[in-house]
Image (cartoon, rainbow, N blue to C red; front, side, top):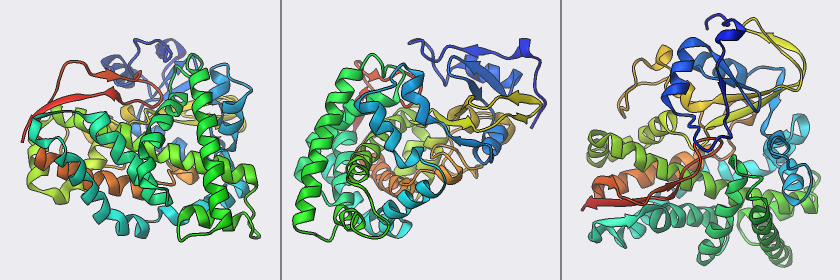
Length: 399
């Protein structure tokens, strides 16, 4: 770690500006002048060492709980649901909810599903590989992510289009346009709440050997999930697993089109699928920042941080910090320090084993079947702040 610069040397970024890019040269240049920047949400931490330290800091709590309020959403369906997330709980309440949800997301569970992930990827690619072109989001990333979730939770696989459609709209809540999109977001949330109610009622009448039935049983046991916790938690699991995987797969294709030698290497060496996931998430994560909030006044790197301060840990900036990783490179064979695309500390992503596994199986299949991919005209992207990814990603390739 290095010293804190004088206040006049600390940059400011308006992260709500539609033209702002968190992965821009301006941010990387600022990282060389200062370990942090100021934003209209609070502090942004730009370097790997400081991000790693603050993820474990005892005076910081999970901070994205304040995201709707930061954007003027302080009441209503979205604000209420947001407060319920296991991610946004602390202490024993956080441990209780995480303990109940964890069985679906263990390393063993992910490993057991890997062959199914691979077969699903092959099935989807078979539908368009011979044409030399595809719209990657709608033809692969969305159905793949949504069908993985149906298998994981024990939902009917035929319902993936509904899950994909409503979850994609709900995902707008994670971006800087949340206030503008609030009506659409809350309509999607209402639809998913009604769907969750139907699924829970079905499992209450007749339990099955699936994760939703396990949650229903937990609502009757000593740990006790309330009715609202059960419904809100199920919607979070449906939405969270879909949104991040869909976005991250699209960002992976973007990264590999910039590094065709590594795409060819992955096609030749599918055992590098796991490395491919880590390298993409290091340099091009869908979660552009991980948020924390100060529980009390404290001093870090000679900077006084008041209680209540929002601190954004910029994952791409940390992941490409030359102090740790050297000059920028994208190399599936390189040994790297850990990235922060799944967060860290007690709030490390619950579903990281499954996310790593499903993408590690999909990417080698894509690399073998979609040779020399190029992004065609007409790509549409979410803003490069908050959570990002492609809305449309037309590709051309040789097969």
